[in-house]
Image 1: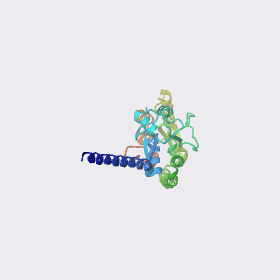
Image 2: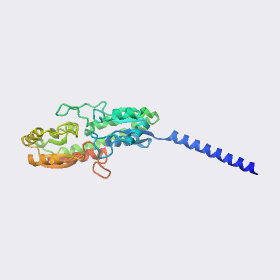
Image 3: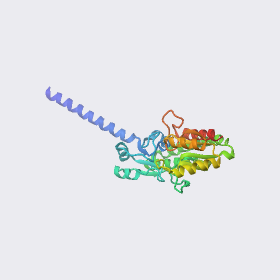
Image 4: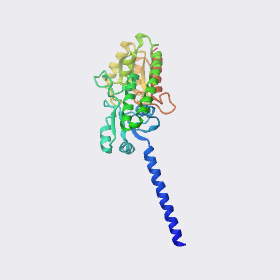
Length: 300
């Protein structure tokens, strides 16, 4: 009896072990690919292209500025386990190369700025904020689809189809943006923002960049007193109707410039990051439309 009892227990243990092995194998075979996106904008794009075939981890969460970010241990772990890393490039993520190296990741690295016609800021620096042009957004989407297909060839047709659908949505959003921005009179199509993040937006929608409160693409830079004085002069000389603040930057300096120049101030442009869930800028498409709406309202 005792021997029989031991044999039954042994058989049960073997059966459970076999079931456990099968579960692990099935999970591995059908598991989603792991993708790390450096920004909230890129993460949202990647979710639209990948659908349910990938697990997307965003290093920068909504409302977080890329320029002053310090990666965490959680970010390093996500990078180490990733099969694909999607970045903006053009100097936006100054912290990324070292973080990737330290993580020891074997992931494929894709820069979404590849193929974009680069714009320079008023200071002569490369502007990395490429996504503010919807046309550039479509290039980024294509780069995401190619990157996903590189690490998951079986899903390439799905990624291509999703990218096509998403780009059509971007085109529809672009038409809505143009309708809004076309209401701005020719002599009022002049833009002043917190920092030099809207070069591509202005180029696509025929707006003139008069200046920025922080004369740099880096929102952590500090403007000199002389630079602020010159900006006030330019705003008055150009008869700029309003200045715009961004959600990730302290509006204190903008408020000071607004008073000195005697112009209105409009808040809530989404410059470096998407908005929190439930906000007007919670997705890439909503962010584009919200920025266009706010700029049109401020300059009309």
